[in-house]
Length: 255
Length: 255
DNA sequence: CGCCTTCTTGAAGGATCTCAAGAAGGGTGG
DNA sequence: CCACCCTTCTTGAGATCCTTCAAGAAGGCG
Image 1 (tube, protein in one colour):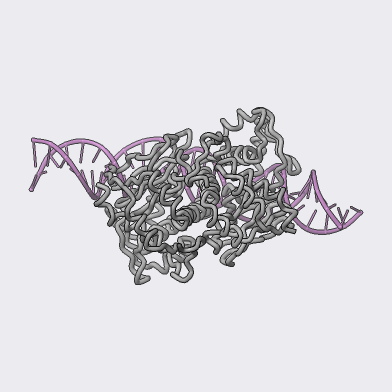
Image 2: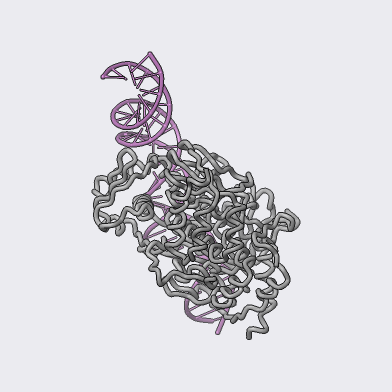
C-alpha cells in the first residue's frame, strides 16, 4: 500500500515546507516514506499510555485528541489534531507515550514507521530540523492551552479554542464568514477546555445568542470572525501559520 | 568570558546525556559553546514577546518562569525552569518568542548564541537529535500542566506541581524526607496553577496542617514524600528522569 | 528603624459543578 | 419509510469551590 500514499504524505510535506526550507531530495524523502493507512472509529484509542510505539501517526481525515485522565476518571484533552498533522511526531525521539491518542470522530490515520523517519532524519539534517520545528509549533499551541485553561473564563476560553481550530482548519480566508466541518461533541469540547459538558452547552448558547457561533451537526459557522477573535482574545501568531518564505529558517547548509 | 563557562555548560551537557547518547566530540562541542553569563533580578523579564532573539538562555541559578498574560492582565506561568534547563532551546528553530521569560527569583543565566548552536547542530546530527528530545521533555511537562490546571482541584494541583518541582530539583533520593531551596512566592505559584494568591495560601495551609508540606522563606520541605505523590496523583514518568543508559536512543550513526 | 513585599485572615459574591431528567438528533433494522 | 435505540444536547435547581475585596500581620532588607 505504501505506493498509494504519496498524496497523503504530500499534506505532511506541505505542512513542513510551510515553515522550513527543504531541497528536492529532502522533499522526495518525505514522499517516499512507507506508510499504512488505517480507519479508526470515533472514541477509539489508537495509541495507549506506556506501550512503546514504533510508528508515528499522520492524521488524514477526522479529528484526533491527545488526552490523559485523572485518578477519578476525569478526562483532559491536551491537544487536538487535524488533517495534515503528524500527531505524535515526538514519538520518534521519545517512543514511550506519556499520553494517549484517540479519534474524536471517525478518522483515517497513516502509520509511518519510526525506522524510516529516523533514517531520513539521520541522512538529511534539514529534515530533522524541520521535524523539530514542527514539534515546537505543537508545543507553542499547548503553551497557549495552559493560558486558556488557567486564566480565561468559560466564554473566552471556548471562543479562543474555536478561533484556534478554525484557523488551523484553514477556514479563515475572507476574514468575515467562516464555515468548517468540525465533528467534535460538546462533551469532547468540555474535556479540551477543562469544563463540564453542561457548562459548555450553556456557554455555547451564550455565544450563539450573541450571534458569534453557530454549530450544528458537526458544522461550525462563525459569522463574525473579527468579533469572535476579539471576544476570545485570539492572536494567531503562535500558530506560525503565515511564515513568509524568506523568513523560513534553515540551520544546516543545503547540500 | 567564554572560557570560564565550561562548568556551567557541563550542567547542560549532563542534562543532554541523561537522555541521549553523545560521542566525545559531540560532548566537547557543547562544552566549547561560547556563552555570556548574566545576572537577572527577581521579577525581571529577560526575553520579551515578539522581539526576535539571537541566543538561547541556560539557567545557572534561580528559577525562571515562562509566562503570558490575558487582556485583563491576569498572568499565567506556563513553565518553570531550574538550574541546568536551557529554557528556550526551542528559540533555535523558532526565534520569535510566543511567550516571555522572567526570573522568578534572582537568577543567573548563560546566554548562548543561536549561531553557535546552529553550527554544531548542523555538524553533528546527534546533537540536533538531543536538542529536539530535550525540547520534547519540556513539551511533555507542559502537557501535564494542561491536565493539572484543567482537571485537578486546588489541593491536588498544588501537590502535583510541588512533586514535579521537587523531582526535577533532584531532591528525591531517600524517598522519604525531601528538602530543597525553592524560592518562589505564593503569588507566582498561583500564576503557575491558574489560581489566585489567596486561594493558594489557604490551600497551602491545608497541606501544611495535613503534614504534607512545609514551606518557609524559600525552603520547601516535604516530610512524607510517598503520601504527597499519592495526594497529588503524581507519576514522574513524564519527566524522563530515570532513562537507563541502554534505553537511550540515538537516531544517527555514531561517526 | 522603616519600608515594601509577602503572607494571612474574614466575609460575601459568583462562576462553575453536580445531579437529574427530558428533548432532539442520527443511525440501524425491519 | 417508519420504529427504535443510543448518543448528544438541553434545561432546572441547588451545592461548592474558588474569587474578590479589604485590611492587618509578618518577614526581609537597607
